[in-house]
Image (cartoon, rainbow, N blue to C red; front, side, top):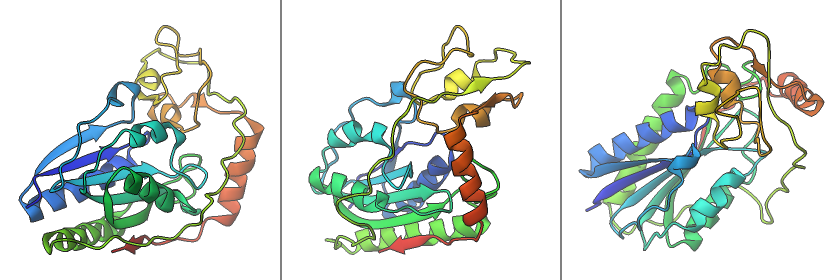
Length: 259
């Protein structure tokens, strides 16, 4: 019997959080287990977690950045201890492609002693532009999330579930260049500090939200959290990526499930 559903998510713009919690709720109800939530979005949440027991299950959800697992998660995932626990892995991407992210996450967890028995790629509104993946995950997506979670629970309940094979290639897709970039603040800032509170890298000054140190990962959490709509990026590379996404990635993609 599964003892605990441990839910771990990195979710600057909240879509991965929504999906992870929905899956965890279904697993816990179906398996008669308790839940533990580990939100590792903000720096203070990235503390070493206790080991999973062999009867526990881990739900891991994260946004895809450049076809990969967010680099900020690498050290955190390398500290996990699976001890034979089942894992359900979810990559959330902005209607372009998830590339090698699911494979990479599965490899990371397998090396730490987890058995990845279910995985999925779900779509969310792209962080760079609301014109791509608009309004997703929508009701249809969340129905697929529920179906996926029930199937994963049934697989775990049957005992000794087999690991899954997911799409992706090794070596993984190369990460893009990491030239410094940071958000700007327009006129009318009220210094509400919501951008400071939402920044997963802690690089926006708590004393002056117009000041940003190095380390921004362009997650756009600050942009989406600004009630005045005056946080923005003016980097030409981001503008080019946004234009490419809007011109080539408008056709609706559907979730992919691996069970």
